Length: 352
Image 1 (cartoon, rainbow, N blue to C red):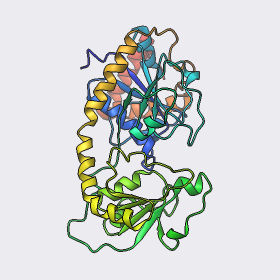
Image 2 (cartoon, rainbow, N blue to C red):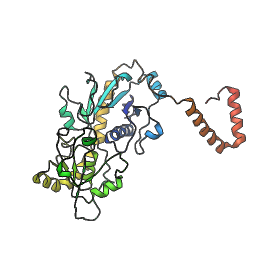
Image 3 (cartoon, one colour):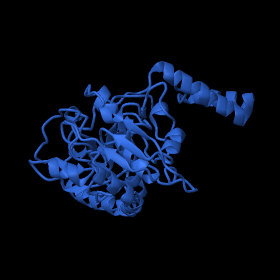
């Protein structure tokens, strides 16, 4: 596949964050392309320290100026993948792929979709919402771990409920509905937020999980055998992955009929999710075939992100050199290290 996928992929993403499903999808896409024989890199935007921004579980190297220069000099046209919450025209991408991870303009008003943008959608519901042109592919790429988020080993009598209203409350300023009054609130990115282990433990014993929006938490609850009750509101009209899960495992609204449906189908929802996971590699390869054909016929005139990639400053280079020197001393000793330094000074190759 590598000979057929010579054009690289630059995936524009903020730093990796465990609590951001969208960011995790972008890093996972890079990982899947690399494992499929392609060459994918993460272009961090906004700029962030690479050591603090990497994913601990994905093969997703960061883009740097040396890599961009190599691709430009060898005529390898990059395919730039970016989510709907990032503006990229300033980076002069030769091939643009807008990966719609949420409903267009729900959270962010981006630049208009260009006529030659390749549109990729996270789910069929998102694809159906686009009016000007249907996305060419969907890659349903949930990142919740079905091994970690699993039903309890022993049968339990489920009781109690919890809810999540992250963006509904803190982004849109919504007020929680009376139905969730008195329930435990699950939160993200707050000092008192639950850990993944605590969230799993809750989902393995709660009777219902109420959700005011699409969230990876909903799928994680379903994977643990906990039915989900979605609460429709002005910012949440259709579940993103409803068609992919075939309406299983969740209630749309809190009617008794819908809640009974969620309870009766939650086990089947987990099985449907596991089946869908097997389809992802094929979806990624089909996307790569499409975009490689486009890149092969697209001129690469202006280097990508010229002037935006940040080289290390003098202080950082000095710090890196001290670590380099430490490792050489460990291997060669002081005498051997001084001999190497002397040779490099005489040959003019000693630089920080």
